[in-house]
Length: 122
Image (cartoon, rainbow, N blue to C red):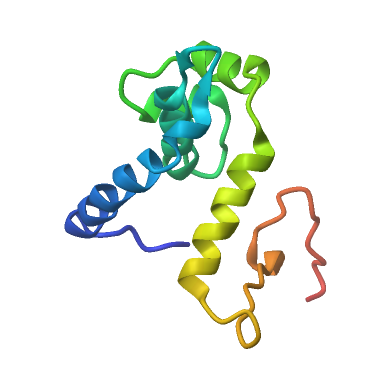
């Protein structure tokens, strides 16, 4: 079980999170429509909704957010995922540095698998 963060730590994370998300906002302009607010709400929901992340749970924890709007954003937006992925990769590369001596490895072995049945003999 994770230890809850102190309020001042969460506040500091929030102050850094908003400018970071805004640096991606230009990816969310589609047909003269600005969808960056929906992208911010969706990203905020992913970070706050606990272990069961769905549009309803996300809308419960993100201010001024409706689950239907998030669902429409995800299903009907004609966005370039490749541009967003490339932007994330460039940001990660800038933070990690040296291509020859640096690696970013994501290990999913610590993520709880709710469907896995534990062996009672362990």
